[in-house]
Image (cartoon, rainbow, N blue to C red; front, side, top):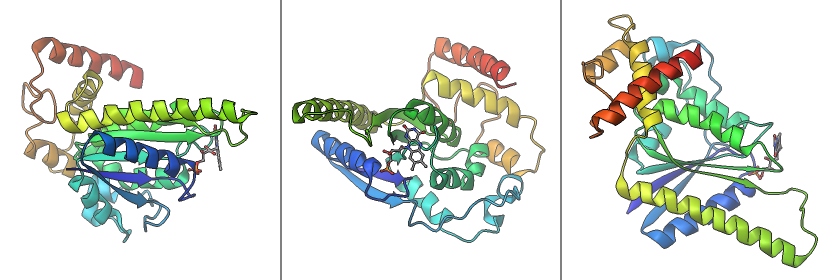
Length: 260
Ligand SMILES: Cc1cc2nc3c(=O)[nH]c(=O)nc-3n(C[C@H](O)[C@H](O)[C@H](O)COP(=O)(O)O)c2cc1C
C-alpha cells in the first residue's frame, strides 16, 4: 500500500481544490492500493516565520516558534508520496501555503524530503501554471521530485450555457485528472528517480554549499551525507550514466548563470 499525504493549502476546506484532489484520490485508488491522508493547513497550527534565520544558521531545533512544524515534518517523511494542493491566488500560492513553505526553509539548505510529489492547483480563470512553477521551486529545493502536476480552471462563473456544454467540460476535467493521477501513481510504483533538472540543481547547490563555513549546520549536514565527496552527482546513487551526469553538470552552470 502507498501512503500519500495531501497537504491542502486553501482557506476553503471543501472548495474546488478539495473537490479536484478527491477526484485524484479516487483515480489513484483505481490504479492500486493507495491511502490518502489530508492535512489541512487551515487547521494546522503553523505560525508565520519570524525571519530570525535560527533554523537555517543554527539548526531548526532552535526555532523560537512552537507549533506543528515538527509533527508535519514527520508526516512528510513517513509518506510514500506527497500531494500539495492549493488554489491560485493572484498568480501564486495562498498565504497559508506560503507560510508552510517558509517554515521549512531550512530544508532548502539541508534537503531531506526525497519524495515523489504531485502538485494540484485550481484557478478561476488562469495563472495556474505560473503558480505551479513557483511551487515547484520550493518543493524541488526540499529534494522532492515533481512527478505530476495538475492545473484545473474551475470557472467560478461558468462559461457553459447548456447541460451538454457542462458535460463536455466535466469530461475534459475528469480526463485531465486521471492522466495526472496515473502519472503520480506510476512514480509511486517506480520509486524516487531524479530528472536532469533535479540533478543539475543538486550540482548548483552543492557548489554553493562547498563555500559553507565549516561547523555550520549546513556544512555538517552536507559533509555527514557525503555530498561534498568528489564524484557525487546527487543526494544518493542514481545509477545515472556518464552522459546524464555530464549534462547535469553543464545544466548546473547554465542555471548558475540564469540565477545571477
Ligand atoms: C484572493 C483570491 C485570489 C485569486 N486569484 C486568482 C488568480 O490569480 N487567478 C485565477 O484564475 N483565479 C484566482 N482566484 C480564484 C481561485 O483560484 C479559484 O476560485 C479556486 O478554484 C479556489 O479554490 P478553493 O475553492 O479550493 O479555495 C482567486 C481567488 C481568491 C479568493
